[in-house]
Image 1 (tube, rainbow, N blue to C red):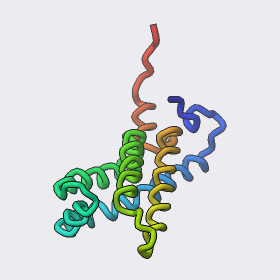
Image 2: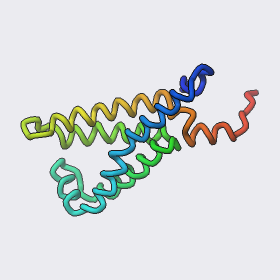
Image 3: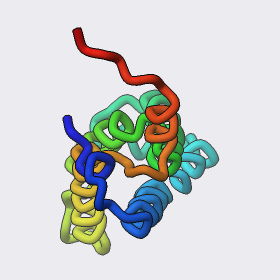
Image 4: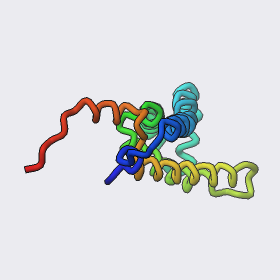
Length: 146
C-alpha cells in the first residue's frame, strides 16, 4: 500500500509534525488505560466477564494497549498496531458500550468508533516521516527488482 505522505515530495515538515502529534494523541488513551487495567486487574477481569469474555483475556488486552500505544506513538510497526488497536476499539465498544441509557455510554461508543477511524487513517497513510518506521526504511538499502 503506497504511503502518500512519504511518497509526496511536497510533503512539508509541518505535515510530519502534525502526524507525529496526531499519533501521540491517538496513543495516549492506550498508554494510560493499559497500565490502569494492570493496576485494577481484579476489577477489569470481572468487567470483561460482563461482556461475555473470559476475564483472563485481560492478559492479552494489557500488552496490546501498552505495546500498541508505544508503536503508534513512536511510529514503529505503526500500521500493524493501528489495525490491531482499531479492531480492538470496535470489538470492545460493541461488547461494553452499547447501553446508551446509561450515562456516558454513547460518548464512549462514539469516541471509540472515532478512534477506530483514526487508526484506519494511520493504517492507510502510514505514520509519516517523523517515525521509526521511516527512519529504518531510510537506513535500509532499497532492493532492486529483477
